[in-house]
Image 1 (cartoon, helix red, strand yellow):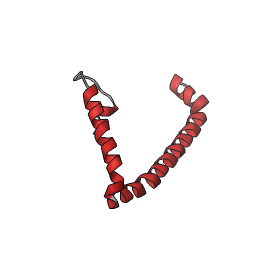
Image 2 (cartoon, rainbow, N blue to C red):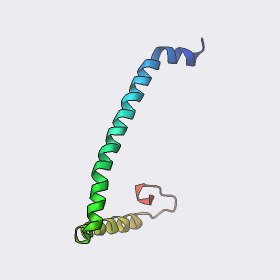
Image 3 (tube, one colour):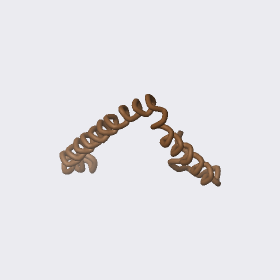
Length: 81
């Protein structure tokens, strides 16, 4: 029996259980995100006055990120579209 087969024989059930828990938690988080984001996006597009503070916050965060990228090799969450 090779080392990898031995490893899976010893830890395989624990790894699969952890994988199942991980996928469940990811699904719950994704579902909650969709439940919050979709209605909020619809509301903010229907009521432009309510969306103004959100768009100002978005513009300010983009301006802050652009002022922080001094190096052309810098990679951060600010560089995401």
